[in-house]
Length: 331
Image (spheres, rainbow, N blue to C red):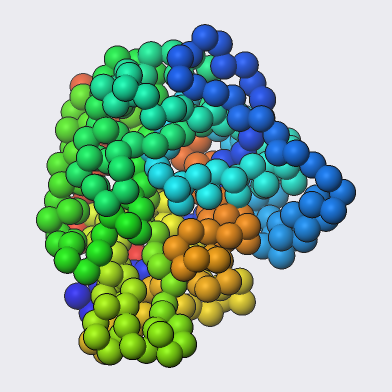
C-alpha cells in the first residue's frame, strides 16, 4: 500500500457550488436556502477569508460553463462536513454572485429515506442533504442509491455521495468498503445510464498534537491509523475512476495554503491528514477550510457541467479498471 499513498497529493483538482434564490416550486421537504445575515464587521472578516484562499481559478471559468452548470439538476448526499462545504460554497457565491447556482437543502424525511425524489428537481440547481447516519457507510450508500434510482430520480443529471471521516475508523476494511461502493455505482449506472456519478474522497482528521497526541500515538489510539485507512480507501477510489470525476476532498484538506502537505505517520508511511488551520475541532471545517474545500467542489462541478450523457443503451462508462486509473495520476 505504500505505493498508493502518494495519490493523496497527486490531484488538487478543484470544484464548488454557489447560491442563488431561484423558486423551488412545490417540492415537499426541500427548502431554498436563505442568504446569511450580514453586518459590515462580519462581511469584512468573510471577505478576508475568501481573499486569503483566492478565487483566481474560479474567475478563469468561462461564463458558458457556469451557464451550463446553472441548468443542471445535481444531488449531493452528505452529513456535517458536507454542510461545512455548502457554507463555503455560499461564501464563494457571495463573493462571486454572477455564478448564481441555485442550492436547496432537502430534509431527512421518511419519504426521502424511502427514495422519493419527486418534486425535488423540478427546477435546476444543487439539491443537497443527509443520507444515512454517521458511522454507517453502508446505510449511506443504500440511502443514496434508493434516492437516485427511486421515484423522481430520473430527473437527476449529476449525483454524488460523500462519506464522513466518522464512517472509517481503525477497524474498517478499506477494500471491502470500496468494493461495496463500486457495486453501488454499477447498479446505479445500470438503472440510470444517463446519470453522471461523481466520486468524493473521504475527509480526514487532523494529526494528533502535543503531549496528549503523543500518548495516543504510543498506545495506537490516535488519528493516524484511521487516517491511513481513509487514505487507502481514497487511493482505491483514485485508481478506479477518472480524475475528472473525482472531488478530491482529502487532497485539498491535506494541502495548506502555502502548498505544504500535512501528514500522519503510521508504520513509517506518511498518510495525508487534515490541515490544522482548516479545523477547530480536528475534523469539521472552520470558515477557512469551508472555502478551501468548497472552491474545489465548485471547480469540479463546473468541469462536469457540459458533459454529454451517454446513450441509454450503451451505459455510462463511469467505472473503469484500476490500471487505467493509476496511469493517469502522473505519480
